[in-house]
Amino acid sequence: MKRNILLICLTGFVVLSLHLIAFAQSYNVKMEFDVKVPMRDGTRLSADIYRPDASGKFPVILLRTPYDNHSPSIVKQAMFFAEHGYVFVAQDVRGRHDSEGEFYPYKNEMLDGYDTQEWCGTQPWSDGNVGTLGGSYVALTQWYPAPLRNPHLKTMVVLVSPPDPLYNFPYENGAIMPSAVSWLAYVHGHSNQNVEHINWSQVYKHLPLIDMDNVAGYNLAVWDEWMKHPMLDDYWRSMSYESQYNEIDVPILHISGWYDDDQPGTMRNYVGMVKHGRTEHTRMNQKLVMGPWPHAVNTTSKLGELDFGPTALIDLSKLELRWFDYWLKNIDNGIMREPKVRIFVMGENIWRDEHEWPLARTNFTKFYLHSGGNANSRFGDGTLSTEPPKDEPPDHYTYDPSHPVPFITDPTFSQIGGPDDYQAIERRDDILVFTSPELTEDLEVTGPISATVYAASDRTDTDFTVKLLDVYPDGRAIRLTDGIIRARYRNSLEKPEYLLPNKPEKFTIDCWATSNVFKKGHRIRVEISSSAFPKFDRNLNTGGIPGLDSVMVAAHQTVYHESRFPSYVLLPIIPKR
Image 1 (cartoon, helix red, strand yellow):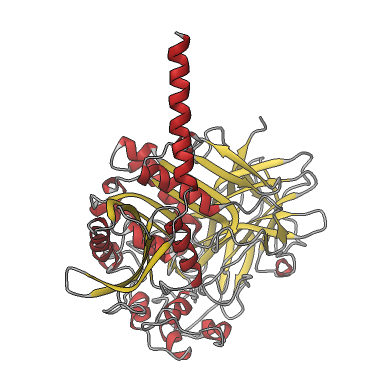
Image 2 (tube, helix red, strand yellow; image 1 turned 45 degrees about the vertical axis):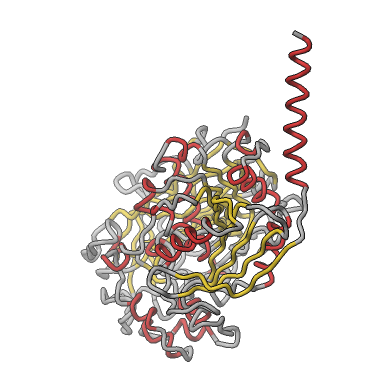
């Protein structure tokens, strides 16, 4: 018996040692640049190949990008993985840099991605196993071909992935994101454009929006197309990947940050794959990591007004390597025995493991809006509490699109907002401000945030916005998250329904997600308004086609909080353990 136990222990030690050797082994790297990969239509896409300078076959990591496959950050990644025993293929997508063809966002990534995966899986240096990697648009180059289920594709690592185009970029719930035009300008033609010298603040103010590209000095046919399709139609359906979760059959590592401006894609994708992935094996093998990061994940511990501390940054390359080692090399390094969800809890500034998203122990709690009818600005009488309203007068404000509420952000697409202080902006009377009493103990809010607002307008179309903030004892009002709804699309993105003037309507507003401990002495704050410019375009309140309209009129808004119309924000409260 003892001999058998000893044999088992020795065997386990040998296996573990081999795994550690495989993890630690370092290869010299052989490089091949501008290798032309043929697509099914004859177009040739340029790939740079980094592979171990050794005999044998190796698994492949594929990254497809519109941003230059020879950029320093990609070269650094490629060298890292090649040194650890992978072939790294970095490809320029169609029409970009050294690749042939014409670049049109989203449209060619499905078939081109599949064909490139097939090529990677059948080369002499490939063992037939392919994983994909990358963030932002590079994440989309993974999602689009995934439903086709190339037999060589074994796993994906997707970072800061946008959702379907109509849910975040270039539209969000019907509202246009003006910064999308700066992105299109950046990727115009074959090489990256220098767009830093353009006065984007002035460009975004131009009407009609369809002409913003010309004002910036470009003629962007794609921007014109986007502006002519303001609702969910066949044009956008052809670019949907979320509708095909049930066809995707690979384990996926999802990574994003609480201040990633594409954050809803990661949350929607993780939940969508856990619920609708093609097989139980796929559904069980999804993993989520959420840090206190902007769109450029894991690059800084300081953002906006806050410093998230020394543990905010992680060894991301090591995490990705462990994931690929498990799924492409069959190295049992324990990563799949670890909890499926790892989140950074802001406020406490700690990492915490969880087993699901949203957290099973969440107490979704309604925090109701209250006032005596004068919640305008942070100097008004708006309050926030868990007590439902009874008979309270509504609040009123005038939304003037020629003088919209500012949203604090970088001028281009590179980062849209962060943990910024809004107390100066909250002096405006066209912002309704509802604030809780000082908290007597810490309160954790972790999960999806939404608001239900009962409101009316004297116009047939307008916008309503919601922002959730953490108010510090020194008065700073730090943005956590926010959302918008275009009134005509309050019930459907497919079929607009215009408002009846001054008739109360229910608006459900998705405010994405967060994880934050409101510390003792802090207060919870909710802002209600009708603009957040230039994150979103200004609704001109005319009911015209947003991108084509240039006439603006003021809208007189009413927000209700009474027993018949109890407006509230729904917060995911996590009880103390």
